[in-house]
Image (cartoon, rainbow, N blue to C red; front, side):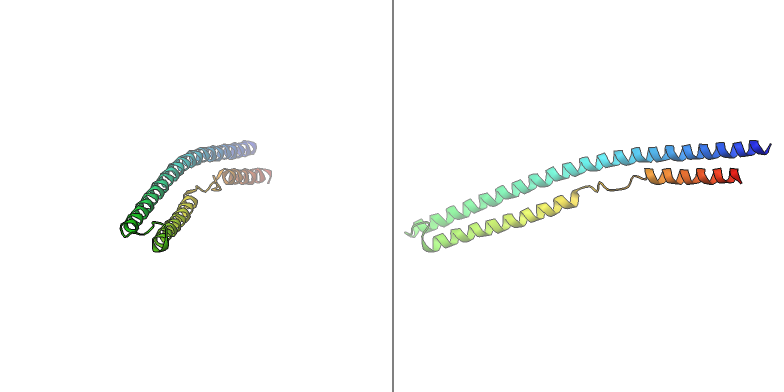
Amino acid sequence: MSQLGSLGTALGASANSVARLRQAQLQNATNQAQLQIDQQQSAARQQEIAAQQQADAQARQQQLLRGQASTQARAASSGQIAYDGSAAAISGGQAQEAAAAQGAANARFAAQSRAIAPNLLQPDGTLNALLRSARGFGASATSLLD
């Protein structure tokens, strides 16, 4: 009769181990699905940021071209050569400002891209659940032997 009790304990421990393993598998599947969703959202956000960066760069380029054209027109209306003396200095300053703004935008884009990247090293819990169920099974086996 005591052997039936031991057998029942062993079966219970086995069922408990199988249940924990199944739970770990379900958790792993859920984690994988969430990871895929996170990756898709990250990719969409990356595309959005890249498109915004490109639009900002084009706007800065347009603004630079308009500013230089305006400088050329003012210089020409006053009888100066457009890229001589102060007109050249103004145009050069505008180009430097545009380059600095583009550099700042590139740095901001890089920082945003790094912040979006999903953490692929997140544990999924499968190994922990397996170890817990093995520990539980080991304790049950030890109690059977005692």
